[in-house]
Image (cartoon, rainbow, N blue to C red; front, side):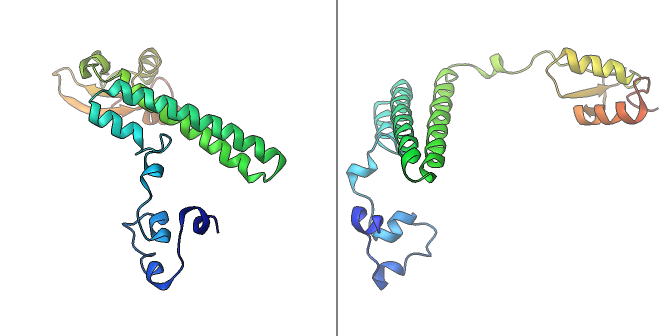
Length: 187
């Protein structure tokens, strides 16, 4: 009913024929035509005004700021929905929680992208990789696991050739089944 009144959806046979098309959004299927420009440019929508402003200005900082504003608006709306849900429909509380978390997540994602935009990959990658030898004991591998942030370790022989890879899950399984004195690889 809301779709018919607010968005002008029609339920005649010609507009219902396109309901099963997966390339058309649900709202467009019910309405039979694209959304008006004023709804498309709402700053709270992912492809709204903030995306167009950032795209045309070429300034990612403006996109991040616009997203921050849109997320704040979304959180205020979520708070209002939650408040209304206390006195009316409790389903609004769940919708409010979802909207609040989605707005927070979107703002954090865009802020992280903006901060990492000029950071080279070399600054983010691991440069010190711990290696294990096949004759090493499992307790040495456990010490290495606790000392580093790695979750997988290359097992390299004395000639520098890769023998295998020891993952964290394999290490825990071997520790449980074989004990700490067992060797990583058997000859």
